[in-house]
Length: 67
Image (cartoon, rainbow, N blue to C red; front, side, top):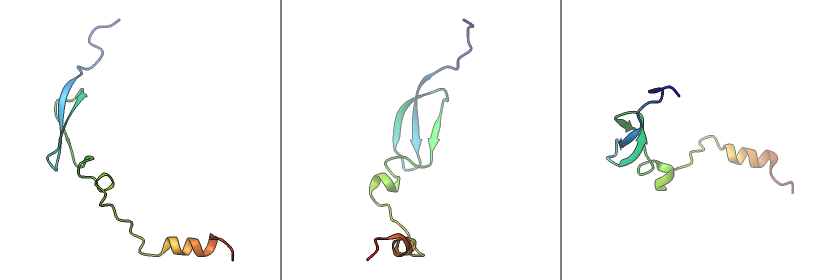
């Protein structure tokens, strides 16, 4: 096998904007992310469904159960 064909893999700390730090393995020396599971609305339970045009109601009216 050829020597030095694979990048160096080591443990690094990935840092989120919210301050959360996660230790992972990577070939990059420094990782910064904008959003993580500690601050993402889906994982924190603060996610809101915005339906400004009433798409769900319109769908139910068209394709819902027939009376």
